[in-house]
Amino acid sequence: MIKKTQIKWVLVALFFATSIINAQSKKTTMEEQSVVRTIEKMTTAFSYNDVEKIMSCYEPNAVIVFEPESPISDANVLKKMFTEMTKVNPIFTYGEHEVFIKGDIAIHINPWEMTGEAPDGTKIKESGLSLAVLRKQENGEWLMIIDNPHGQFLLNK
Image 1 (tube, helix red, strand yellow):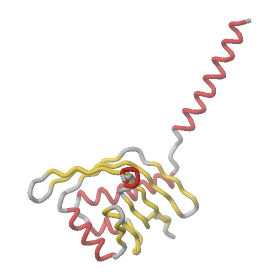
Image 2 (spheres, rainbow, N blue to C red; image 1 turned 180 degrees about the vertical axis):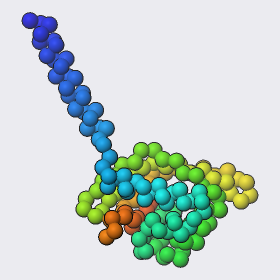
Image 3 (cartoon, rainbow, N blue to C red; image 1 turned 30 degrees about the vertical axis):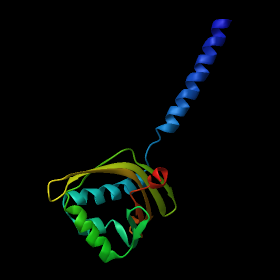
Image 4 (tube, rainbow, N blue to C red; image 1 turned 120 degrees about the vertical axis):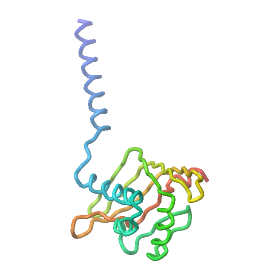
């Protein structure tokens, strides 16, 4: 009798453990993948020094936080900032992507690391937590409307 009870409890424990594991390893939807592709398109464009492609990942009036507490939304200034950033030949790597979507708005969260080299040869290495808000366009494409690569800033303040 004890063995049957023990086996039942083991089976119950396995059932709950499997449910928890399945919930934690949820499958990414097509829409979530599309959001991630927008982020990857933007960061890949840096490796090709393609400022126009970088800019194409944002809505025209997007807000970008190049430095904590200093949002910029002027398209001409953004283009200049991106042009300067491409001069260090940045290479981005990511941690896991987390995407939440409600209607035509999505938030993308992920840790990132960037390595590059200044024109004088100085090695550059930065990292942070990216928080990006995207809006789905009429053509189905997702574009960033807010991009804050310094989401960890308040934790370190």
